[in-house]
Image (cartoon, rainbow, N blue to C red; front, side, top):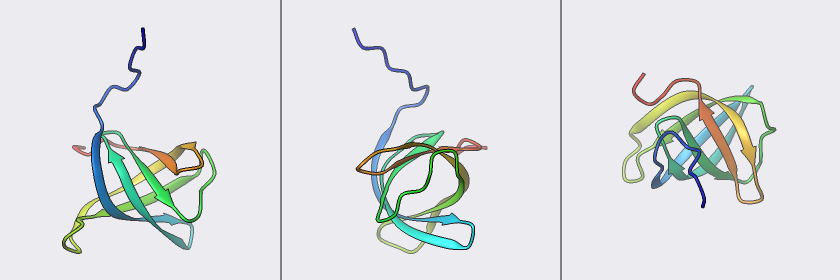
Length: 90
């Protein structure tokens, strides 16, 4: 039997995101979001353990949904899993 390892449920969310690494900005798309992390697709991948800043925008307006620091914890062919330094409520 499979046991879920996540502490927070994931919400399917399709939104624009900007990933900031040093002086570079990488445009991406959010696939899903939780209180503690996000999975993002982007044209360029970032290395595991890199610390980035991610800004997620509402899809219908340029309004910022969140702007957080995160650590890259997973990289796949499809995208990157980022773990927030703080939860969305902190």
